Amino acid sequence: MAYNNPYSAYTQTGVKTATQGKLVVMLYNEAVKQLNSAINWFNSEGKVDPCHIEKLNSNILKAQEIITELMVSLDMSSGEEIAQNLLSLYVFFNKELMNANMTLNKEKIKSVCQMMSDLRDSWVQAESTTTTSVSSLSPAISITG
Image (cartoon, rainbow, N blue to C red):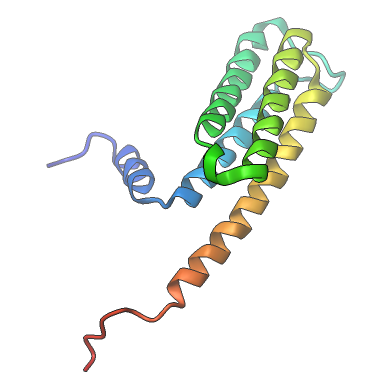
């Protein structure tokens, strides 16, 4: 079967085969990408050209959708305090982005973007630690004899 868009097929396979930790990192990566795109719509004077407001809005809304997805994916029953703290952060991020979108406030977007980047880096570290821990376990069955 030929693929019309090989990159799309590659991306879909990556998502379907990713661990939960990798999926979280992928969400953070996309949110940071969207926020950086939003920041880039501001000119050197900190203003947005009226013809770019819709694009800025779209980038912020996509980031908010991703943050909302992160919120609903939290396991509040077993995540305990960490899940509650992340939920509070995600609510804060969405409120800040909503306000930044309404007031065209570049600094609020940059602030949320930086915090999201820091959280992403923590998830990357946690994911690599978890992957290393799991891969260092000896297999239950040895076929080498």
